[in-house]
Image (cartoon, rainbow, N blue to C red; front, side, top):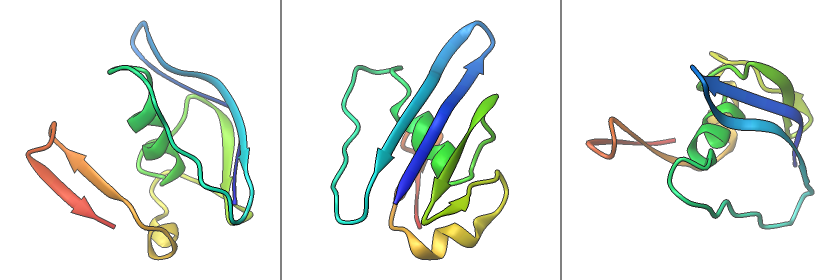
Length: 91
């Protein structure tokens, strides 16, 4: 289960994610679609605790996600490409 409330992340004057609130229940499939720069990767990185949001909160499996806590990684499957695809890290 995934839940966010007002999730926001800025990079300078760029509003990568602005007030995202969503709820994905157990058994549901949810996908992120959008143009380059729409905030898809930034949202996933916040949901995995890889970066800290500027404001808002997120919960995965009922536990609050905090940047730097990698305990969550053992419970999810993700492939994150760093440095614009030069290095991919399967979680």
